[in-house]
Length: 207
Image (cartoon, rainbow, N blue to C red; front, side, top):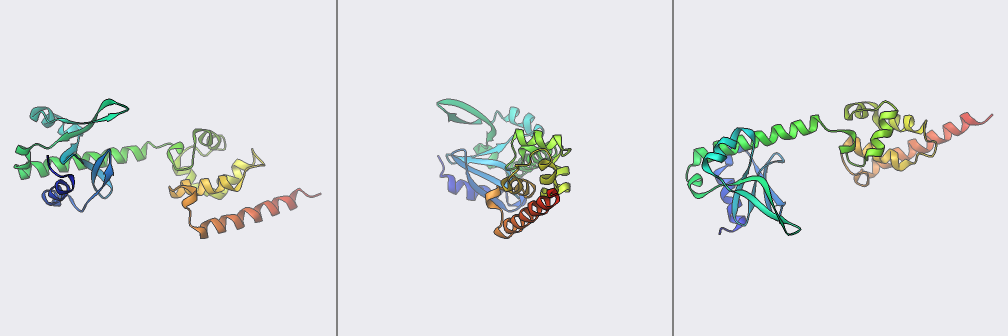
């Protein structure tokens, strides 16, 4: 059995043509990625390539073994297949196969982004997605176009008790980060806008 960290360095050397390869802990092993797109895993010193439709015939022909890990004591097979020693010795074939896996992972990621719903954004739940749809904000593109402030005002027409936390959540969703990770400058600007908006609305309600 190979050492996983040594295997990672070997993989980076063999697959340098794919671009700068990054690695991080995942599934009890390490993921390999190019521009944050994961195309392979290293587990217990072995390299496993991520399957895609273009490489499935090759996987079947070579009878490549799937990566299996245990979840709550039950075996779970992942769509990653082990690179055996003969394939390691076929450098051009390994690179070509890895490129197909990387391209397949990129296409999958793009498709996921295109099909994302509002609830898939940070801070947004299914309930919030329903509320947003009720005020005419039905897609991620619409939310980003409207902006957090205008969207918050639309939501507040249906709920006068809407808090500033919802405003933070909307801004975080648009920036695709958790609301607690918003820069302090952004939070301060939103707090100021929130206070001024409530003050202006209170004046309008006075007889």
